[in-house]
Image 1 (cartoon, chains in turn purple, cyan):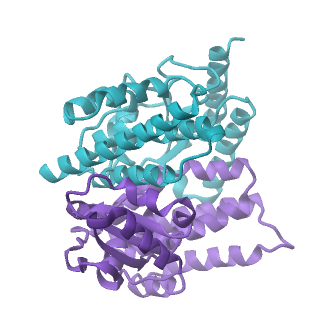
Image 2: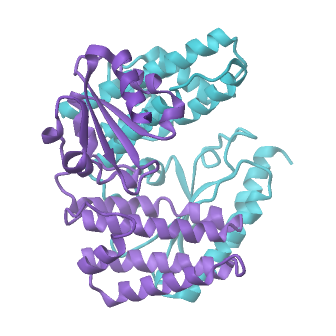
Length: 228
Length: 251
C-alpha cells in the first residue's frame, strides 16, 4: 500500500523524467525497504523525487534518486556501511516495479578487496564514539552497537569474496565458514558470553563495556592479519 | 578568566591527564579552532584532538582497559566545563604508520592546522587506504542525498530558523567533501575557495552566503525569506552534486 502510493506520487510529479523504479532490500539497513528511482539523464532536478515522496514515507522507505548517468554512484563505498553491498542487492535481487529494466547496467565495485581497508579506516575514525558512550555510562548501548558493527565488519569481509547475500541471521555461520580461525572463533565466544551475562537483573557494567571494546579491537586486529 | 583562556586551561588539563598514560601515548595532536587561535566562545568545540596510541596497548587487555579509563576520565573533566564538547579521536600507531579516512589528512598533517601537544611528531606517518578518494566520493554523495531527504518536507514557519541552522551544520562540510571527491585534499575553511578553481561553474554567490552563515549564528528571518533561503540551499546542493558527478566521470 505504502509502496503503491509512493510509486503513484513519483509518476505524477516526475512524469516523463521518470525512467525506472527498482525495489530492493538491504538486510542490515534501517529501514530495510529501499527504492531506487532512476531519472532520465536530462531530468532537471533529483531533489524533486524526495519532495514528492515526503518525509513521512522517507522514514519508512529509504529512497535513492539518481539520473541514469549517475548510476556509478551505487557502487561507491561510503560511511553508510550497511549499503556497501547495495549494488549487488539491486542488480541480482531487486524488482523493477516501474519502467525500464536497468539492472544489467548497475555497476559493481571493481576492487571489493579494498572495501575492508576502507571499513577499517572508517572504524578508526569513529572510535571517539566509544568514549562518548563511556562518559555517559551508556554501557549496554555500547555493547549492542559494537555487536552490530562486528556483524557489519563480517559482511564487508564476506563481500570482499563477493559473497553479498548475507542476513543478520546467517552472517556469523557464513563468516566462520569463510574464516575458519580459532582466535576469531574464541573472540566471538567471549563476546557472546559477555552479552549473555547482561540482563535486566544484571545490567551491563563499565568493566563489561571495556571488555567488549577490547574484544572488538581484537577481532579487527585478527581479521586484518588474516585478510592481508 | 576570559572564555578563550578557559578553553586553553581545559586543553592543558586534558594533556595533564593523558600524560599519565606514559609511553602508551605516542602523540597528542591538537587541531581546529583552539589550534588556530580562532576560538568563538560558546560555538567552538572545546577540543579537536587525536591521541595516537602505541600499538602495544592493543595487545594487552589490562593496559588497553586502563588506557580507555584514563581517556574517559579526561573526557568527563572536559564535558563538565559547560563548553561545546565532543570526545577526541584515538588511533593506533602500527608499523605502517597510522591510518584514517582522507577528510582528516589536511588538518592532521599540516603544521599550520595542527600542533603536537605531547610525544613525538608522527604526522608524517599518517596515511589513508582511500588513495583514490573513492570512499570520499561515496561519502560526498551520501551527504548530498541526506540533505535532499531532510529538505523533503518544509518545516513550519516557527521552526524555519532552527531548520536552517541544522541545514547549515550539514552543508558547511559540502565544499570540503566536494573537493575531496574531486581528489583535492583541503581543509574545511580553504575548501570554500578551492572548490571555485576545481568547479568553475559553481554558484560563488551561494558559496559566499554559506561561508558567512557558517561563521555566525543564524538570525530569525521572515518566513518567506527563510523559505527562499532553504530553496536556494537545496538548489545549490543539487547543482554542486551535478558538477562533482560530472568532474568524477570526466577524470
